Image (cartoon, rainbow, N blue to C red; front, side, top):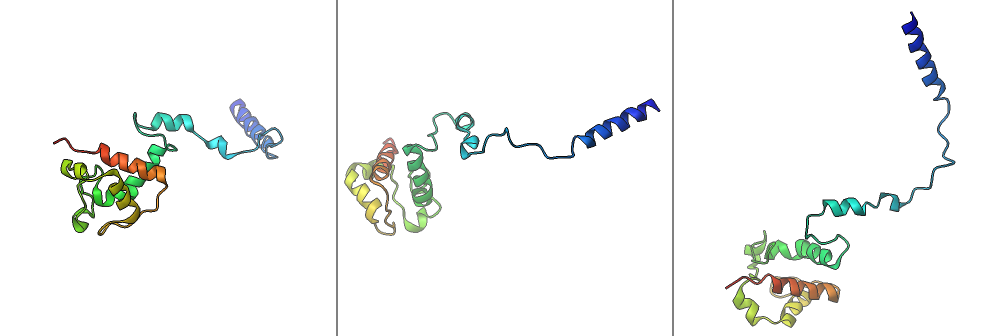
Length: 139
């Protein structure tokens, strides 16, 4: 009997505490910054991966979304559409030697053959040229 009394008392106390919603008077106003999880993002990002807001990250995102479809992830011309459009192997040492930075930038800006033109900010364009140069295969 005493056990049932305690249970009944617990239920009554629980119900009595729920008669009104909690007051929001002392709660701060929510802002988008409350969900900015920079520390967590940094922990989850692989070592050496660019910060999501960096210029390097923008260049890599541009490469993946615009270039890799034909040129592949490393520039070898082995992207899903590469064989269909006969994409250039940008890592080929001979191609790298005979093609100037201005030629690469011009092909990106104006298109070439089946490659469409891309309207990119100058810093991104130059960073893509640098990325292509860095992908040079060893002879």
